[in-house]
Image (cartoon, rainbow, N blue to C red; front, side, top):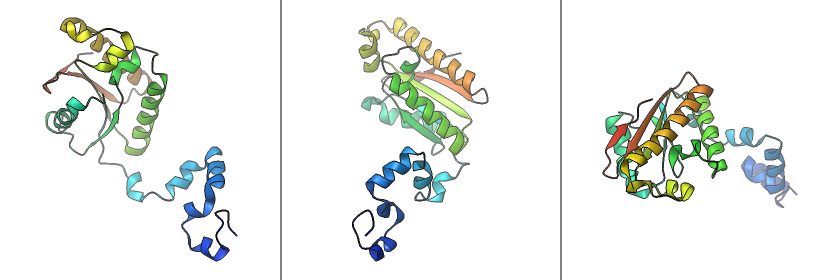
Length: 188
């Protein structure tokens, strides 16, 4: 019997992932073979490069999902040419230690986007009236638009500097979006 408690002849007919069983899969993943195993099941087109130009980091705010897509498609002319990572607060990760796992997640995703899709630019897109900033700092910056712009600009610039320090070959663009979908570029 194979590890999944099927007859040996049944196991030979099963796809490799189902034959492994949970324990064997977890052992293989723990040894670092998880990526190699998964790679054998993913369509080869998922490993293809050439069509992706950028990685977008934006916030999870549902109010701006459509506006973010329009911004990337129309203003930046990147329709179908960018990877997208969504983290509450977007560049907030650069100025607070409140969410350390989000910071690690961003850098891991950026590494994958570089290695897998050979991106050439990073687009950092924050937005006004961001609830994650309220959670992190206990303050509603939207009540004072100038202060809100200043806090977001500080975060965007800090993350831009860090991306460039780690990956100087990338271009990094920083934007702040209003709730009406209009985005202003935050200069370096």
